[in-house]
Amino acid sequence: MKTLLIFPPQWIPYQPYLSLPSLTAYLKEHGVDTVQYDFNLEAYKVFFSEEYLRSLKSGLNAEFKRLDSSRSLP
Image 1 (tube, rainbow, N blue to C red):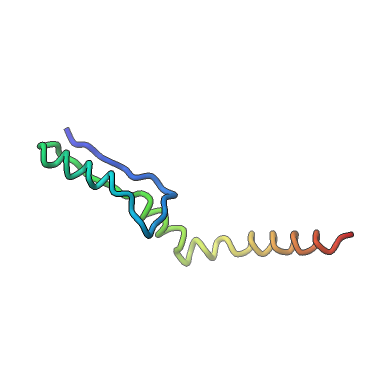
Image 2 (cartoon, helix red, strand yellow; image 1 turned 180 degrees about the vertical axis):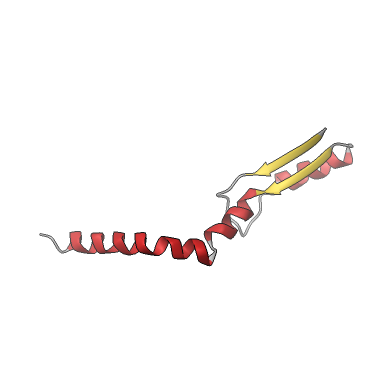
């Protein structure tokens, strides 16, 4: 049996959560075939990719215009 440990997204990318690597090492040391996947890191790669950021541009511009126009009303 193979065990897959997945770390979910939305954790801070600059300070990894070390429980999963510790658990992975423990399981491997005790003969459990273990794979670790950091989905958090993969998610941040997508969030900060040029393609994804460009896809947000028109929606953000529209929202900024809406907010600017609502501020100018009495």
